[in-house]
Image (cartoon, rainbow, N blue to C red; front, side):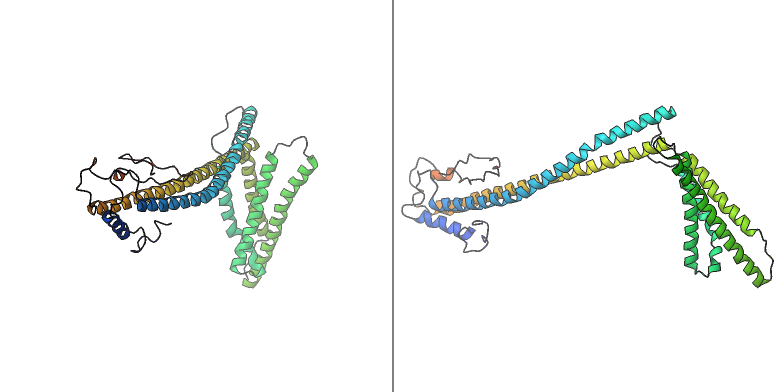
Amino acid sequence: MQILRGRWWPFHPFSRRNVARQGARDGSAAPPIPPWDDPDQPPFIMQMKQAGDADAAQMGRSWAIEEGHLKAAVRAAEAGERRAKDRVEPAKDVVRRVEDEFRGARGVEPPAGSRALPIGYVLLVIALFIFEFPMNSLVFRIFGENEVGTWLMTAMIAITLLACAHLLGAHLKHEPTASESRVVGVVWTALLVVMPLAVTIGVGMARSTYLERMSRESGLGTSGVSWVWFCVFNLAVFLAAAVASHFAHDERWAAVARARRAQSSVEAAHAVAEARTIRARALREKRRDAYAGWCKELSDLVQLLTELYRTPNFLCRSDRGDPHSSQKPLSYERYPDLTWPDNLKPPPTSGGAPGAAP
């Protein structure tokens, strides 16, 4: 930057001090520079303009490099936005299709929202999970587990029972299609019933062994059917969760809820991609405005330095008392305009009528 860089240094050729001294030196010349009736700018002003042109050209080259990267970022953002937008309409079509299927099967409008399972069912499962802990935690003490291991094993039993109940209720509510094997459905149902039964009976017998050992050590009697009641309690929990799952699951409504969630996700992704495109475009405009502003500052600086040159130049002229056709030299009527780079448009001029420097 021939004008901007290092201009604070007093010996810079275009520092305020040197520009004013050069103006006074040219005005004191014989004959004074510039000639009074010559509209052309003096050599020093033209050197300053050429230095400013070089600075503006450098800004143009720097902006061209940065603009290339910003354009690539805008194109990438626009491509991502187009891909996201292309997924919106298919998602809406899926929602309309499953809602029509729900109306045809149920004869009513699908409810609002996108929650597949009722909140009451979720709260019931949480309550049953918590209710399982005090009954099952005593069982694992027979194995000498520490407190953490006891609660972890209790949680595993509770999760197993409730997960099997959840899957069993959903499976029994499932409407099989012609392509699904009936044998697979029966095996799956049997597995979901046998697994919680085996776990419950095994844990119940382990609990009974634990209580009998404790009774022998303490000399207190215990009921021989305590393990039966334990099994009844856990199976009741399992049955309650399975029945609740059966009534809570609705494949038609679950399809509507899934489609609505997918649509919301696609629309959110499109909104994010659209915002990314807006930010990329705004950044490009912001950076271009910054470069244009720097060029405008450079143009204003050249005009300011021109004024700093002309003031002592006029005061030191030996011909200012002579009769002339104008009050000031003709070259004072115009400012040297910078040559702006092609990729940065010059800002509109205000005040006066500065023309292009010769």
